[in-house]
Length: 332
Image (cartoon, rainbow, N blue to C red; front, side, top):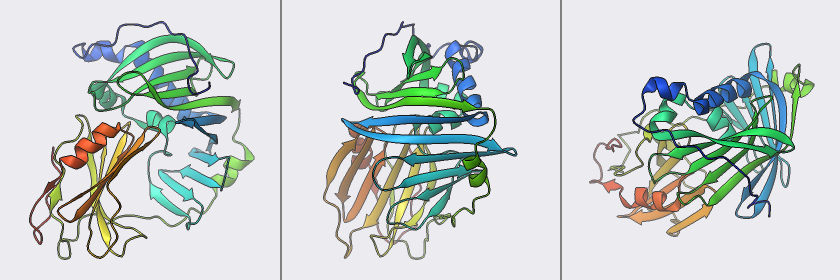
């Protein structure tokens, strides 16, 4: 079966956390990621790949180019209603069924290939061990295989295949702590070009949709929720704390975003009030887990590319203070 496709690797010893910075920076695994990041951002190419989640297969096409010094990328899901995203100059435009097009400020397109291309490698080494794991073939192309192993048991690990000749991505497996596959991204075809395609040139001049932004800070005058995060995985940092207006609710909800540069976690909080709260639930789709929990009249939703147990621990340890006070900042 595709989901359980086997591969042969030659294991090496993982990088020790006690190794010096100089040794770590000179490691073959780090050099491989540096080459990958450079190729991802600077080359002209097209990748068709599939995402496999719990036996469900989604075909995707990703096209990248640099037009007059401007990096442009386009991702489209090939089955079902059109779902597309366009990256250009630190902005991502989303074109999704049933919604008006919108843009968000971002340094990358969503997805694991983009996350690895954008992550700060020195920060990545603080939280993960990087290990060369052998050689294999994907889509008929020779590939170098590496492991990205979390230093905490609360996050997923990765196997990553990089094309030998272009340093572009061929396959990425998200695995849990026992090594079981939870999500797979696998290239079917990879084509490289000398110059940007006509489609990339057209996207470079596209008028991007209006940007959607949350409030920079919580509105303390009208804000009635006083809560903070308790526990969250080591290496994660709070990078956003604001309010979002959701179409399904008549009021704004509190929003906190955490990231370690590779995986993101979003936490939403809203007073139940007259709205219909979601039923308490814990679900997983591939690498993405969602946990909804109601505590003291507040509905908390934790969603991100984390194990279900981690989502539960975050939700269970949320701290709630008195109402009608200045909101607390999230702390670890």
